[in-house]
Length: 487
Ligand code: AHR
Image (cartoon, rainbow, N blue to C red; front, side):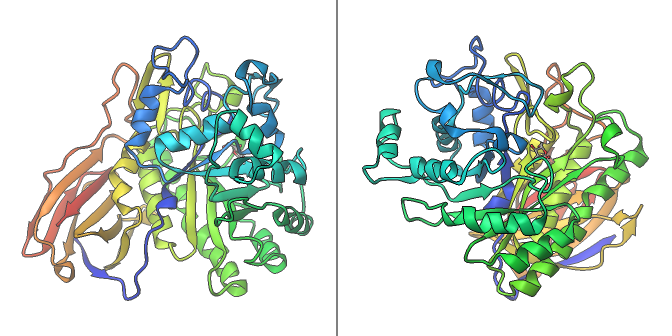
């Protein structure tokens, strides 16, 4: 039996809601046929969104959404996506498979989407093929209440009041497709660009610089040496879990061995080392932790589903992804002092999606259910879990996070092992009296939802836990995620 004690933190530490952020790019069927409905769809709202997808996403209380890319951001010119839809230029999405890009979904549609979801907007500016002026104009168009020509244009296009823009990214993967730059060159460019990114509503706007490709610590070192917190409030990092570690043959999304499952979770947990090492460097330059580490893009990346367009990055999502998501969210929470935002790639139909669609049908993936079970951690006070976690199969035996908000305590536990485990939590320091509810998500690591059977993997009431004299004990099935809410 694994034994733990749950205790309040000595210094209050709030889990930033934005660690539960998401990322949506003009890529494959994420926007068109994902968030935005196909013309003929019976699921189309009057405004054009996909009603069933929006309804499901609303339930997650998404804190922030990043758009329009990714790599696409570096080919995107925001003026293409405003004005009368039939007059918007039609271009080709040369980044992701060369389909026609109608620009039907643009700035107004994105901000309306954020309104519908109740989330903050995070725009990624085009540094690759755009200009400083273009970025400055976009920020003005979005945030201005002055009677400028751009403000009048926005009003003519149907939006009177400025929108809130709390986050702006400047440059995406500039070490790769975003410009093949060296960190020093980018740092100097960034200093210039950020200077003209001015929110016209004079409200706080976090400027986020492009950070490292996973373990490129030199990048972080150079950025921190050359740009300070007055110019950069966030520095990003991108890390994707590729089971084989080889981009050409990443591994299948549903057919894998138990050993490949374990290896995928080990690779996902590399996030722990990444965040520790990047934070260590940032601590040296910024001991007051003014610059946030922003995990702009994360999640699993497998070979595309056979028979689908290679460039559209459509993949199934199994219990393995649920475990990956649960363990990774827990890692973010343990790095709350530095990691202020993280965005899973990508909301619908792309990579580790929350939702998959096919025609007018949709399903919630196992990953969706983890975000649902964990949402009580958003903006909650992190608690300390004291106790040793042994390694089994080169992985932590289990992963646990506890937080409290109002008068409730949420305990989430992930058992990445393939065998059952028992655990006991001494909650006496929190004075909890009763289990309000307990939910379990489990299944074979390859289990997944299909359009014909959308509820194969979904949370059920968990009767394997007991609270007696403030001691919570439980038996966790192999490959499972549990969420217990206590009062
Ligand atoms: O999420 C898919 C792509 O992965 C993004 O466009 C890019 O930023 C990253 O390489």
